[in-house]
Amino acid sequence: MNKTHIAEAADLIASRWGCAPRVGIILGTGLGAFADQLDIDTCVDYEAIPHFPCSTAPSHKGRLVCGSLAGQPVVAMEGRFHLYEGYTAAEVALPVHVLRALGVRLLIVSNACGGLNPHYAKGDIMVIEDHINLMFASPLVGANDEALGPRFPDMSTPYDARLIDQTFEIARQENFAIHRGVYVGVRGPNLETRAEYRLMRTIGGDVVGMSTVPEVIAAAHANLRVLGLATVTNVCLPDALGAASSDDIIAVAAAAEPKLRAIVTGIVATEASIPTALGASS
Image (cartoon, rainbow, N blue to C red):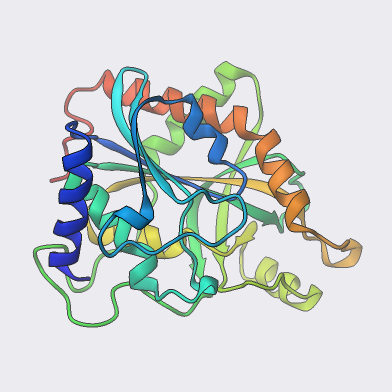
């Protein structure tokens, strides 16, 4: 990870927006409409940010939305980057370190995913409690800068247990069901075969997707607290497998967006009421 590139990107964003956000949000496929729920101060296109990749995936607008939520300054990535777009894991994860340089200490990562667990249905939300990296890539490969994080970051608890508990409480208050489980990250862009779905379920996966893992590894490296939210957009039962289209996936994710909105808004409001929580990691 190049410290100079991180600083130059953060400086450009700071020059467009004078606030120091404590919460960063990465919005996945079909979830970009959430950004419209913010009290927006400014938007910065990725093309204008030094060293930022460009989003090419469907429904990813490719801009940084800066504003407030529940009275707190937040910054949201309306669109992310993927290995299948041709980017390296380090390029995919660069924005995480840029967000940290801006002041972010809590990262909320969302995605659209396929459901491996037979108890999951389209439109369900799963809180990620762990992941399996079948991308066989890490953003930390190469020389390490100790100023950014340790050479061998611990991954025993990459997803914050307290945030998971808070999320379940919010879902109970809002009267909708959610799950907790394991996210399997794959490179893509093709969807998986029936045999691959069986394998991933056998090794402990509950959902599968093509993102999130590089960003969460980078967040662990940067000592950020992480909440992962996966929206089940298609059900991947190998013995009853139907064809999936990107249009259907985007539509299901968009329909589930109010649940995501309730969770994220509740988390930001709850964290704001605990003065030391967001500043605990430096």
